[in-house]
Image (tube, rainbow, N blue to C red; front, side):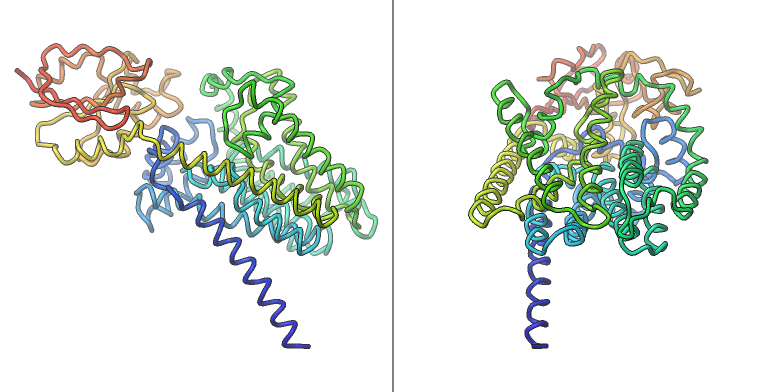
Length: 497
């Protein structure tokens, strides 16, 4: 009997490890293929600075500093190559799969746990943001772990779990402001539900003391948050994503497929949304336990989505990556609901979901592997051919930070721009990504490349000629002698005649 139990436990451990291995493999696949783009380059360049400088420049952007501080120390150990900086998100993504399985096991059966693990390991949006040098994978891990700790507190009534929940929520709030939506969902759950002993936990003294400590821990950052709210122009690009009735179904479709929604996929978006709604209703009907853990999970998934969707009619903010943490709960919802089905229907449902995820990942990897925009190769050519007396010039803000990331010449790149230098940091253009350079803007910002001909023998211009946003740059005083092209990027070499 003892041997049988040991084998049973060993088999479960092997299944968990196999699922985590799958999650690791799909996140490592083609990890270094995509170019380090604007937001990723900003993350790395900012995190290379000293911690006090990270705090200073983060305050001039739109996000809190915790992820950048984590990445700062991560790079001290592992370096700043693409594999190294992206591996922090990979680790967070794989750990999220494990936490998702732990949470599902608390709420449902072992079979549901395995299904949830597989769906979460292959979840396309989970893979996508586990391969990016941004805070979203870390945020998902923090909030899903906080949800697990909250349920442990509700079910076991041990304040050590509440302490862990509060610490995780503070870390999440210092990672992304939309963590507040998760906190709102948890408050709603505790306000409407009762614990396993029938008590309303929102009235618990420990709950209020914990949140008082959370507020105190966040007080130092509140003045910075107030300052950032005065620079809404930094998120002005979101107006290109207007909110509509179809926003939520389309966001579900993007989470499971990563595809750009077109009029041909609207029907599939609605079908998938209905499938998720029916799964949620089935959980409410068939999976009721003391403490109502199913309501906790559903609140975590849908309250932030609905609140942000409604708020976006006033100020557009409904972007998939901002709700990444809520989407992570969807595979768990589907797994728990499918576990209540008859065997044949269960197998068909699981096969359909896994097929959709695998097909979507195949399309995603195929898109990543296509040529077009290999800035890293272009910059490697520039670095190799660099000579003393050379200058490097980027001509678009979107690629300038990436150029600086790949720049190994020992000299900072110049930036061709009509933006007026402002070393005081008062102008609106000195906030956001350009905060990293405004203090040297008098030196780095170039409105006329002719002035560089007086100081340098050769000029490397790294540009993207196929882009409609690439400016026409005057080359008076320079003669082009060579060029190197890779994908959509080009390095043009000029000399003084």
